[in-house]
Length: 344
Image 1: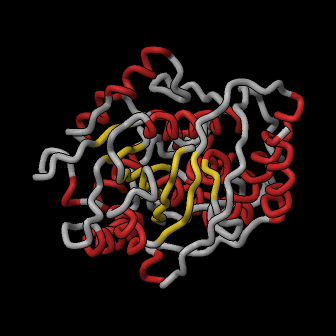
Image 2: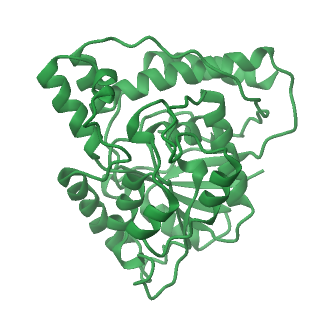
């Protein structure tokens, strides 16, 4: 079974962890293009519940979570567990597969000029939000874990960005102004944002000239429920109502989000029920998103989402050509990466 071979290749780097490093715009780091290899097909996975990884009840662990290392280690280990569950599952219909390659923004601009890639994805994680700050301050004050912080009545629900987070995204906007314009030819055709407010706010700050209602380009903005962070019982993942989102961020298309709420398939909806989502459910969502963008005409797609969702997309749903790519690395807050993909 092909998925078993893929698990064997991923297990060791995932479990020992990959050092999280800042990427930002690869064009500014003068990174070399990646080498190409043949992609390996993998098969669709059914929903299953994965037991959560034990968490250390200590303030040091809560502080580590804020740096990104905690998310990476826990999510990566659980991701491998999700792969292992598939060993006992029957193969079903073939999934949508796409070969991917990391590229800097200069390479992304050049890729727009030819047909080597079907889509150019601009992936970004939101900046620091108020729940990140609350958890850090709570741990420092009480010497306890972030789970206990989540139980505090003052824990932020669907938080916006902190001042630091806004500043981070303003720095990103300087890069987008440099690289996303008519001179480079790298112009977004579509913006896709998570329903969580910190992701929407981050995208709007990062691309102010493409904001809905005020932009002359008229580039569509879509709120997609599949891009939401993994539901883990945290109040920060309780999504706001479409009405509140429309009031706060007008001009974005919330139709898909509304439809998902009506079907009842959105975790942590406005009823504030702390449901938990398995890793396989999360990976099925990133697969569903990949299938969705395949059917759309837009080529340069900006996606603003969250740490575990982005890693599931990059480490599972996309098949990277280069084994040394950054797809196993957790996105840092406010980080942006560009990826060229070719559908099989």
